[in-house]
Length: 138
Image (cartoon, helix red, strand yellow):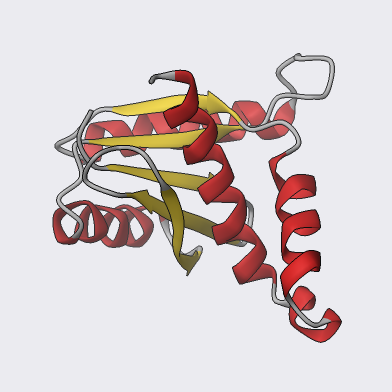
């Protein structure tokens, strides 16, 4: 499968995760603070090159009922532009419940005050998106 990078694209931040070379295990990598699309895409392209990534997986924030709401539409437009700016394919992947799951997992291992770190939560959500993708494709 090769190395994959996952993005949890929010209004203010982008959580980033990467998997190991075997495509087995995802881990949080970093969180990017959103700037302009051009700046975001440059930083993502740099991570793709640095991590030797073959594909980018972007979280697709559908509603709980599975419908595409305003946030999903914004992410689709963003991913379409990102795809044109990168040299690797970009794929959308359902991200329902990932933030809730990330919060629950972090609650188990972090002191309460560190749970307020939204960047840590965004990167953890990206790792869950990527792990779900990896599990579905093995």
